[in-house]
Image 1 (cartoon, rainbow, N blue to C red):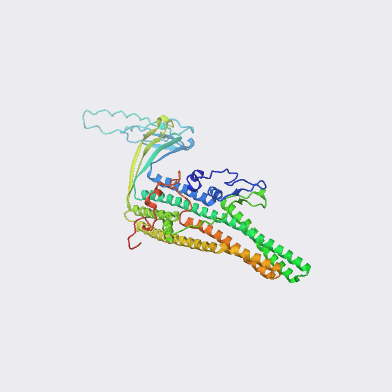
Image 2 (image 1 turned 90 degrees about the vertical axis):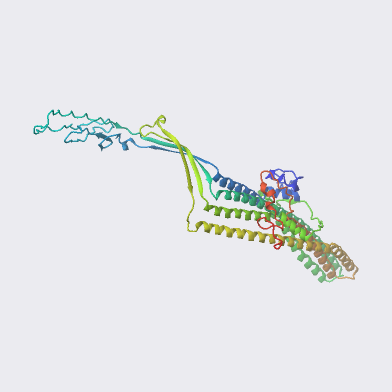
Length: 556
């Protein structure tokens, strides 16, 4: 993340601080509480806030999706192999080429036959005398043709009968108890209609994650500013309440002295006591709000609880709530918000991704062609030696194309088209949401500006009214009730002015967020910003539609 923040223009002057201070300044010796300025708090949040870290991991996840889908169009090489061993007791020696064989147990023996002219033949099964496989031996009796007296031949030159042919020798072959097969095959997609649209869609998913990251940055910066100013205003409100309590305590002491002197009735003392005790709970509430606001900011900054600090605050802040009037044109602000908001650019990426999903659904109608090639090595059935293997090459081309699927593909196309329409509707609604947020922030700025201007002199006047009420009471021309009322009016004026300052600064932070001006982006973050985000693909002005195409004059 630190490499990323080097490219954020608004923090160019802020160095990367150590993990010990979490971007804070000097720590107090008691409890080791870190102290933050506004810029240091923002930088720490961008380094440690869980929303920012999750958004960064989402970008990495989408990059993994790109790699996964892109791999479908790249070659795949897969080696595979099998190795098998069989107990010799389960393997019989098989005689290759025998005309008639009988297998008894684990061995096979053959029979011998006298010849083709034999009138009869008797085959006697061989008997195996051991479990070990040996060469087959014929133990049966070799028969010859029976000599039968026949009538004298009527043909002269009768030749003597031919000698019987020799008995063929049949040898058994021992099978190997080990067999193995090794193959290395490569597959390559040649053509289909779904992979390339899916790949393009993953790039838009990555862009969507990137713009979501930028939107999260803007949101975190605005939140840190608001919470920082909340601590400042709560601290100031404590001062106002303490001032009021101190004034009421002095008023009570004065009335007690007057009562003891007999110049005022006891009713004045009781009235002063009631006013004081009614003010003390407000001071207690202000202090609690101050503590809670520190805890909330610490959580946003990603600071863990340190047991060694006990009940001490997790951090301290150094800063004020400035009032810097800003002249803003509402129409220009709305157009600026449309052009710069990452929120809208993320919606544009979602629309473009859904367009590719429609293309991928249509692509299922196209044929799919794959090729496979490689080599295979197969062991000999009679010898397990590596030098006695059979090997060769394999090549295959396969193709398929849907002819009739009963509307399955059409159903998917219909679904994706509906999702595309939903994405476009969401984009148009997001445009209106940006317009609403800009107008709300503009209205809040206007309200708080008017409140500040109305309270600038009111505090001075309320302070002067309190001084005069006390002077009148001291001179005997006024009443204690006048002093208490003046004190309440001063407290109200001071609190209203502080709340107006807080509202103006928080509204200004929100206005910068909704107009996309919360941070200055250069669109060139190292190893993070997709190249497509620098093009007009993600121009989201008022003159283009959800897909980035120019609008007609009637639709503007």
